[in-house]
Image: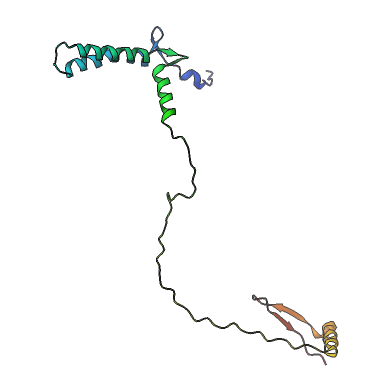
Length: 167
């Protein structure tokens, strides 16, 4: 047994009941009968003839008959709904990311600020300037492999120098 894909346009075709009339058209054409009988019973004088009742029922029948007319495959009632939705939509859409929907916004509680005593920063000692002879001795120490010179830094970036005493 073969199976095929049925397009969505085929499944949405309105069923024809009598000739070219669909379900929605038949409902629109029968509404004046039931609505007119309710108006005849419900408006005064009750269960009796009045001219204004006939005028209201005829106007209601004409309205339902015109809404049942089919244009371009759609009845006028559906065209009216589309136009009504279009006219009732908002004219401008303002997109705002700064709205408070679904956010936890906490009010800040004003408190008195306590002035804390700040510790004075450590003043680093200035290293003494070396003379030329001392600089030459340090360079010889760095170049000597027996001194086993090692440079280390800690987390704060301070440099530590380790070496063996050379005689």
